[in-house]
Image (cartoon, rainbow, N blue to C red; front, side, top):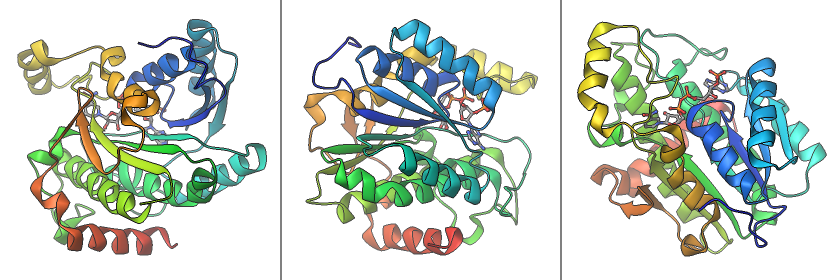
Length: 285
Ligand SMILES: NC(=O)c1ccc[n+]([C@@H]2O[C@H](COP(=O)([O-])OP(=O)(O)OC[C@H]3O[C@@H](n4cnc5c(N)ncnc54)[C@H](OP(=O)(O)O)[C@@H]3O)[C@@H](O)[C@H]2O)c1
């Protein structure tokens, strides 16, 4: 699947959270095709170590690193400014970074961290990059969501989990918002040559799913027949970023490289608009 490809050689792809797990595996597979990767990572040392590994494993030297902590909206803005000073195009944006926090923590801007990092930072990042993404069309935006959004609906009454914190619910709020955002943005970008799709990567053994807690360990053990490697979990992101089969395909939710139904409520245009307006206010754009 992931081999050097004349059509993709030199295309520019930004991946958030590219130093670990599914993001790093995605970067390696796309780099092998000749795609120029721009990694976005929060920690310089972890970023540089992964950058070296991606170059070595892919044989592609066009692997750049930008540092931004997505828990700060200002850092996102500064990173976008730096990107625009140094690049003329962006053909693929993969909004991949994510956290799953056992305890409620806040971002620099005072938002619940899962919602802030997994969703709001990517809402802002995508909107700030839209001009360059449109200019680079045909181009693609890929939102790494999760099938958790099928089991827990978004709670508009407690988006920041202030009333009650439960890690799964906070995570579901963020991943549900990401799917709503995908549908709304796809409609807004109709006719521009920019596609937007969301995906569930599958359950993978990564830093995020490693746990010291025995209940989680037992849960993961029971789930183990379903757990795949980060390399396998990266396949849907790689497919959406590179396959000619999905040229022009937009506003879908994918699992195992197939479009499937997202939660019924995510197709409601009034709810899509609602999260868009709330997000705009929260990130102040
Ligand atoms: N693994 C699964 O079973 C699974 C299932 C469904 C969906 N997903 C989604 O897949 C995506 C990748 O997760 P993964 O499993 O590969 O986990 P992972 O190995 O923990 O990778 C998460 C990445 O996000 C980065 N990140 C976290 N907080 C950040 C911040 N504030 N600023 C910038 N980067 C930040 C991490 O950087 P550091 O290394 O610096 O922490 C890391 O590079 C996530 O969106 C996750 O929700 C995963």
